[in-house]
Length: 370
Picture 1 (spheres, one colour):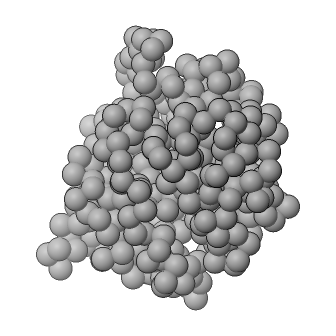
Picture 2: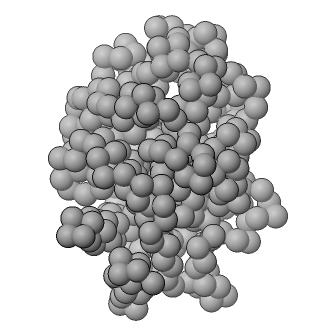
């Protein structure tokens, strides 16, 4: 066991033993090679099933990294470009003044349709054609490219429908064939999970007090502009079989090992496979848009399909890093300056990224001192 593996293993064991976490995975790659693959705790408290390295977790928006990766692989193949008009692939999307929207606007969350209707149900989210029709018919909140707000659910459907229109294939299949299978992680990285695989997933649980907190959120909260209460990503929502089996590419079901390997495949070669050329990586990871989020009011900096920076309160101070966190505290990302990728998945949904920040800090300190 290398020293970093030991340090990370001890840290996540402590998190579980203290009762702060139920089950976790951590994976780290450096220059295309795995250096950490650590697990702790249980995937299913009801049965005592332990977390394995290949256990998929529904890590919510952490999966947007895989959604973006699929888009970039198709750009690399020439199926569309970043400045391709969305209506060139999906004519219906041009309704109500959205005809100027481009793939670049979608990837930088500037396309102008950040929310889903207030009557949207979890069943609706599982209905691909219905959600795409609703989004295509939506009136934009601003002219595409002139403002930004996190497109919590809509990002996944828009990218996914562009992928489907360009390839004739659902994004879940393209993820498997073009990203996951070449990297050897086809059984650890999903949008929609095949029904026979559901028993492998970690069971989510809400941190104590989460239900009370959700109930206390006022109806006019900015948080609910992304979607109604019924679609808020809680453990109950994330354990539903229909949600787990559906293509909802605003989130993903994954192991930490799979995500660390996927990001390593974006940065360079992993086991003889690289997803992007060096020139494409430079374009993908560069700052593409900066502004203030129209919903939450915080400053944001976007690369193409990824927030810029590392996890944590000083995220944007690391401009060479990019990646995605998800509701509940999971995270996966990469740093082009160090050639390092990092992923942490967990099944106790917390309101912050404390565990990911803590473990990422151990990793960063180790490499800075070695």
